[in-house]
Amino acid sequence: MNLPSCITLTNEKPGCPILNIKHRLVTGRVALLGGHVMEWTPVGKKPVLYMSEAAVFEEGKPIRGGIPICWPWFGPREGLPSHGCVRTRLWTLAEAKEGTDDVHLKLTFESDEQTMKQWPHAFKLVLDVKLGLSLRVDLSMVHLGTEPVEITGALHTYLTVGAIEKTTVLGLDGKDYHDTLDNGKLKDQTGDVAFTSEVDRVYRSRGDVTVQDDEWKRAITVSKRGSGATVVWNPWIEKSKRLDDLPDEAYHRFLCIEAANAGDDRIRLKPNGSHVLTTIIDVV
Ligand code: TA6
Image 1 (cartoon, rainbow, N blue to C red):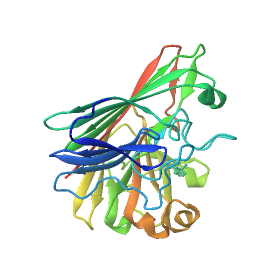
Image 2: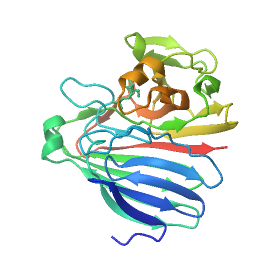
Image 3: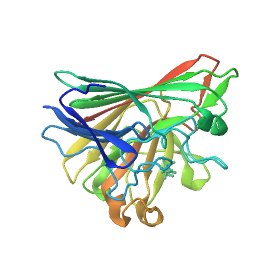
Protein backbone atom coordinates (compact mmCIF):
# COMPACT_ATOMS: atom_id res chain seq x y z
CA MET A 1 0.00 0.00 0.00
CA ASN A 2 1.28 3.49 -0.79
CA LEU A 3 1.47 5.35 2.50
CA PRO A 4 0.94 9.12 2.70
CA SER A 5 4.22 11.04 3.11
CA CYS A 6 3.45 11.68 6.81
CA ILE A 7 3.51 7.94 7.64
CA THR A 8 6.51 5.59 7.71
CA LEU A 9 6.37 1.89 8.47
CA THR A 10 9.14 0.52 10.71
CA ASN A 11 9.90 -2.94 12.01
CA GLU A 12 12.16 -2.06 14.90
CA LYS A 13 10.37 -4.83 16.81
CA PRO A 14 10.56 -8.02 14.74
CA GLY A 15 7.10 -9.18 13.74
CA CYS A 16 5.57 -5.96 14.95
CA PRO A 17 5.30 -3.37 12.15
CA ILE A 18 4.66 0.11 13.54
CA LEU A 19 3.13 3.03 11.64
CA ASN A 20 4.93 6.25 12.58
CA ILE A 21 2.92 9.41 11.96
CA LYS A 22 4.44 12.89 11.68
CA HIS A 23 1.74 15.37 10.62
CA ARG A 24 1.84 19.16 11.04
CA LEU A 25 -0.73 18.89 13.85
CA VAL A 26 0.06 15.54 15.43
CA THR A 27 2.61 12.78 15.91
CA GLY A 28 1.61 9.24 16.68
CA ARG A 29 2.39 5.55 16.45
CA VAL A 30 0.09 2.65 15.71
CA ALA A 31 1.23 -0.98 15.89
CA LEU A 32 -0.33 -3.52 13.54
CA LEU A 33 0.02 -5.93 16.46
CA GLY A 34 -3.34 -5.70 18.19
CA GLY A 35 -4.48 -2.71 16.09
CA HIS A 36 -2.78 -0.85 18.88
CA VAL A 37 -2.68 2.96 19.08
CA MET A 38 0.56 3.49 20.99
CA GLU A 39 1.12 7.21 20.82
CA TRP A 40 -0.95 10.35 20.21
CA THR A 41 0.73 13.73 20.73
CA PRO A 42 -1.04 16.84 19.39
CA VAL A 43 1.37 19.57 18.32
CA GLY A 44 2.53 21.69 21.27
CA LYS A 45 1.31 19.19 23.88
CA LYS A 46 2.97 16.49 25.98
CA PRO A 47 2.19 12.91 24.92
CA VAL A 48 -1.35 11.98 25.98
CA LEU A 49 -1.16 8.18 25.95
CA TYR A 50 1.08 6.29 28.36
CA MET A 51 3.32 3.59 26.88
CA SER A 52 5.24 1.34 29.27
CA GLU A 53 9.00 1.62 28.89
CA ALA A 54 9.05 -2.13 29.51
CA ALA A 55 6.36 -2.97 26.95
CA VAL A 56 6.85 -6.22 24.99
CA PHE A 57 6.22 -6.35 21.23
CA GLU A 58 5.63 -9.99 20.36
CA GLU A 59 2.73 -11.65 18.58
CA GLY A 60 0.79 -13.54 21.24
CA LYS A 61 1.56 -10.99 23.97
CA PRO A 62 -0.36 -7.74 24.72
CA ILE A 63 1.37 -4.37 24.45
CA ARG A 64 1.33 -2.49 27.79
CA GLY A 65 0.06 1.05 27.31
CA GLY A 66 -1.61 3.01 24.52
CA ILE A 67 -5.09 1.69 23.67
CA PRO A 68 -5.33 -2.12 23.89
CA ILE A 69 -8.40 -3.54 22.10
CA CYS A 70 -10.12 -5.83 24.59
CA TRP A 71 -12.59 -7.99 22.61
CA PRO A 72 -14.80 -10.14 22.50
CA TRP A 73 -14.56 -10.48 26.28
CA PHE A 74 -13.41 -8.04 28.94
CA GLY A 75 -11.21 -9.26 31.79
CA PRO A 76 -10.02 -12.77 32.68
CA ARG A 77 -11.66 -15.93 31.24
CA GLU A 78 -10.79 -19.45 32.40
CA GLY A 79 -8.21 -21.07 30.12
CA LEU A 80 -8.20 -18.12 27.73
CA PRO A 81 -6.12 -14.95 27.38
CA SER A 82 -7.21 -11.99 29.49
CA HIS A 83 -9.17 -9.30 27.61
CA GLY A 84 -10.01 -11.37 24.55
CA CYS A 85 -8.19 -12.81 21.55
CA VAL A 86 -7.54 -9.90 19.18
CA ARG A 87 -5.11 -7.59 21.01
CA THR A 88 -2.27 -10.11 20.59
CA ARG A 89 -2.75 -10.75 16.86
CA LEU A 90 -1.52 -8.90 13.76
CA TRP A 91 -4.18 -6.69 12.18
CA THR A 92 -4.21 -5.55 8.55
CA LEU A 93 -3.81 -1.96 7.41
CA ALA A 94 -6.68 -1.37 4.98
CA GLU A 95 -6.44 2.40 4.45
CA ALA A 96 -4.15 5.30 5.40
CA LYS A 97 -5.15 8.85 4.50
CA GLU A 98 -3.56 12.21 5.30
CA GLY A 99 -5.99 15.10 5.69
CA THR A 100 -5.36 18.78 6.34
CA ASP A 101 -6.27 18.40 10.00
CA ASP A 102 -5.80 14.71 10.75
CA VAL A 103 -4.57 11.29 9.68
CA HIS A 104 -7.12 8.50 9.23
CA LEU A 105 -6.12 4.86 9.50
CA LYS A 106 -8.41 1.87 8.94
CA LEU A 107 -7.26 -1.49 10.27
CA THR A 108 -9.13 -4.78 10.02
CA PHE A 109 -9.10 -8.15 11.74
CA GLU A 110 -11.17 -11.20 10.77
CA SER A 111 -11.81 -14.41 12.67
CA ASP A 112 -9.57 -17.34 11.71
CA GLU A 113 -8.81 -20.89 12.80
CA GLN A 114 -6.91 -19.64 15.86
CA THR A 115 -9.66 -17.34 17.08
CA MET A 116 -12.33 -19.98 16.41
CA LYS A 117 -10.64 -22.14 19.07
CA GLN A 118 -10.96 -19.32 21.59
CA TRP A 119 -14.24 -17.76 20.41
CA PRO A 120 -16.22 -20.21 18.21
CA HIS A 121 -17.96 -17.54 16.14
CA ALA A 122 -16.96 -15.84 12.88
CA PHE A 123 -16.56 -12.07 13.04
CA LYS A 124 -15.01 -9.05 11.35
CA LEU A 125 -13.56 -6.02 13.15
CA VAL A 126 -12.76 -2.64 11.63
CA LEU A 127 -10.79 -0.09 13.63
CA ASP A 128 -10.99 3.53 12.48
CA VAL A 129 -8.33 5.74 14.05
CA LYS A 130 -8.40 9.51 13.47
CA LEU A 131 -5.36 11.30 14.90
CA GLY A 132 -5.45 15.10 14.89
CA LEU A 133 -5.82 17.71 17.63
CA SER A 134 -8.36 15.18 18.92
CA LEU A 135 -8.09 11.38 18.91
CA ARG A 136 -11.07 9.30 17.83
CA VAL A 137 -11.05 5.50 17.80
CA ASP A 138 -14.08 3.53 16.52
CA LEU A 139 -14.16 -0.24 16.86
CA SER A 140 -16.85 -1.64 14.53
CA MET A 141 -17.76 -5.27 15.09
CA VAL A 142 -19.87 -7.55 12.88
CA HIS A 143 -21.00 -10.93 14.21
CA LEU A 144 -20.87 -13.44 11.32
CA GLY A 145 -21.67 -16.56 13.33
CA THR A 146 -24.94 -18.52 13.24
CA GLU A 147 -25.95 -18.19 16.91
CA PRO A 148 -26.71 -15.06 18.96
CA VAL A 149 -23.71 -14.02 21.10
CA GLU A 150 -23.04 -11.78 24.07
CA ILE A 151 -19.94 -9.60 23.73
CA THR A 152 -18.00 -7.50 26.22
CA GLY A 153 -14.94 -5.40 25.45
CA ALA A 154 -13.13 -2.11 25.96
CA LEU A 155 -10.87 0.47 24.39
CA HIS A 156 -8.46 0.17 27.31
CA THR A 157 -6.87 3.63 27.13
CA TYR A 158 -3.73 4.41 29.20
CA LEU A 159 -3.44 8.16 29.83
CA THR A 160 -0.21 9.87 30.93
CA VAL A 161 -0.38 12.16 33.97
CA GLY A 162 2.24 14.19 35.83
CA ALA A 163 1.50 12.59 39.22
CA ILE A 164 -1.34 10.20 40.06
CA GLU A 165 -1.60 11.64 43.59
CA LYS A 166 -2.45 15.03 42.04
CA THR A 167 -4.91 13.60 39.54
CA THR A 168 -8.70 13.37 39.88
CA VAL A 169 -11.41 12.07 37.56
CA LEU A 170 -14.50 14.27 37.23
CA GLY A 171 -17.84 13.18 35.82
CA LEU A 172 -18.54 10.00 37.77
CA ASP A 173 -20.03 11.60 40.89
CA GLY A 174 -23.29 9.84 41.75
CA LYS A 175 -22.65 6.90 39.41
CA ASP A 176 -22.50 3.40 40.80
CA TYR A 177 -19.71 0.98 40.00
CA HIS A 178 -18.64 -2.63 40.36
CA ASP A 179 -15.51 -2.72 42.50
CA THR A 180 -13.27 -5.38 40.92
CA LEU A 181 -11.09 -5.33 44.02
CA ASP A 182 -14.07 -6.21 46.24
CA ASN A 183 -15.62 -9.14 44.36
CA GLY A 184 -17.42 -6.82 41.98
CA LYS A 185 -19.58 -5.41 44.77
CA LEU A 186 -21.82 -2.55 43.59
CA LYS A 187 -20.88 0.75 45.27
CA ASP A 188 -21.74 4.43 44.85
CA GLN A 189 -19.26 7.09 43.74
CA THR A 190 -19.39 10.26 45.81
CA GLY A 191 -17.48 13.21 44.37
CA ASP A 192 -14.47 13.01 42.07
CA VAL A 193 -12.36 9.85 41.83
CA ALA A 194 -9.00 10.27 43.59
CA PHE A 195 -6.11 7.80 43.86
CA THR A 196 -4.50 6.70 47.11
CA SER A 197 -4.34 2.93 46.41
CA GLU A 198 -5.16 0.48 43.60
CA VAL A 199 -8.40 1.42 41.81
CA ASP A 200 -10.15 -1.05 39.52
CA ARG A 201 -13.78 -0.10 38.91
CA VAL A 202 -16.43 -0.62 36.25
CA TYR A 203 -18.67 2.44 36.44
CA ARG A 204 -22.19 2.30 35.06
CA SER A 205 -21.95 5.45 32.97
CA ARG A 206 -22.51 6.61 29.40
CA GLY A 207 -21.13 10.08 30.04
CA ASP A 208 -17.89 11.93 29.43
CA VAL A 209 -15.18 12.12 32.06
CA THR A 210 -12.41 14.66 32.61
CA VAL A 211 -8.99 13.72 33.98
CA GLN A 212 -7.75 16.73 35.94
CA ASP A 213 -3.93 16.64 36.08
CA ASP A 214 -2.83 19.26 38.62
CA GLU A 215 0.86 18.41 38.25
CA TRP A 216 1.02 19.14 34.53
CA LYS A 217 -1.84 21.64 34.81
CA ARG A 218 -3.86 20.05 32.03
CA ALA A 219 -7.15 18.27 31.59
CA ILE A 220 -7.88 15.30 29.33
CA THR A 221 -11.50 14.67 28.35
CA VAL A 222 -12.68 11.21 27.37
CA SER A 223 -16.06 10.90 25.67
CA LYS A 224 -17.54 7.80 24.10
CA ARG A 225 -20.32 6.23 22.05
CA GLY A 226 -21.81 2.74 22.21
CA SER A 227 -20.56 2.20 25.75
CA GLY A 228 -22.49 1.88 29.01
CA ALA A 229 -19.45 1.24 31.19
CA THR A 230 -16.41 3.34 32.02
CA VAL A 231 -13.51 1.41 33.54
CA VAL A 232 -11.08 3.31 35.77
CA TRP A 233 -7.84 1.53 36.70
CA ASN A 234 -4.58 2.32 38.39
CA PRO A 235 -2.50 -0.66 39.60
CA TRP A 236 -0.77 1.31 42.38
CA ILE A 237 2.41 -0.04 43.99
CA GLU A 238 2.02 -3.77 44.62
CA LYS A 239 0.31 -4.69 41.33
CA SER A 240 2.84 -2.60 39.37
CA LYS A 241 5.61 -4.69 40.93
CA ARG A 242 3.82 -7.87 39.77
CA LEU A 243 3.59 -6.72 36.16
CA ASP A 244 6.86 -7.52 34.36
CA ASP A 245 6.05 -5.18 31.45
CA LEU A 246 5.52 -2.16 33.70
CA PRO A 247 8.28 -0.31 35.62
CA ASP A 248 7.63 -0.46 39.37
CA GLU A 249 7.11 3.30 39.73
CA ALA A 250 5.04 3.65 36.54
CA TYR A 251 1.74 3.64 38.46
CA HIS A 252 2.68 7.18 39.45
CA ARG A 253 2.45 8.40 35.82
CA PHE A 254 -0.69 6.91 34.29
CA LEU A 255 -4.29 5.83 34.74
CA CYS A 256 -6.70 3.96 32.48
CA ILE A 257 -10.04 5.45 31.41
CA GLU A 258 -11.71 2.81 29.27
CA ALA A 259 -14.77 3.13 27.04
CA ALA A 260 -16.19 -0.33 27.69
CA ASN A 261 -19.03 -2.77 27.30
CA ALA A 262 -18.43 -4.54 30.60
CA GLY A 263 -20.06 -5.31 33.95
CA ASP A 264 -23.81 -4.99 33.40
CA ASP A 265 -23.27 -3.48 29.92
CA ARG A 266 -23.11 -6.45 27.55
CA ILE A 267 -23.72 -6.37 23.78
CA ARG A 268 -26.06 -9.04 22.46
CA LEU A 269 -25.69 -9.62 18.72
CA LYS A 270 -27.79 -11.79 16.44
CA PRO A 271 -26.18 -13.26 13.29
CA ASN A 272 -25.05 -10.33 11.05
CA GLY A 273 -25.64 -7.98 13.99
CA SER A 274 -23.14 -5.17 14.52
CA HIS A 275 -22.04 -2.65 17.14
CA VAL A 276 -19.60 0.27 17.30
CA LEU A 277 -17.59 1.16 20.41
CA THR A 278 -16.04 4.64 20.27
CA THR A 279 -13.70 6.71 22.40
CA ILE A 280 -12.85 10.36 21.72
CA ILE A 281 -9.99 11.99 23.60
CA ASP A 282 -9.12 15.69 23.83
CA VAL A 283 -6.49 17.51 25.85
CA VAL A 284 -6.88 21.10 27.08
O1 TA6 B 1 -9.10 -2.59 32.98
C1 TA6 B 1 -8.74 -3.00 34.26
C2 TA6 B 1 -8.17 -4.41 34.18
O2 TA6 B 1 -9.18 -5.34 33.90
C3 TA6 B 1 -7.47 -4.68 35.51
O3 TA6 B 1 -8.16 -5.67 36.26
C4 TA6 B 1 -6.07 -5.12 35.08
O4 TA6 B 1 -6.00 -6.51 34.97
C5 TA6 B 1 -5.92 -4.40 33.75
O5 TA6 B 1 -7.19 -4.52 33.14
C6 TA6 B 1 -4.78 -4.86 32.89
O6 TA6 B 1 -5.05 -6.12 32.35
P1 TA6 B 1 -3.89 -6.79 31.44
O7 TA6 B 1 -4.44 -8.13 31.04
O8 TA6 B 1 -3.67 -5.88 30.27
O9 TA6 B 1 -2.69 -6.86 32.31
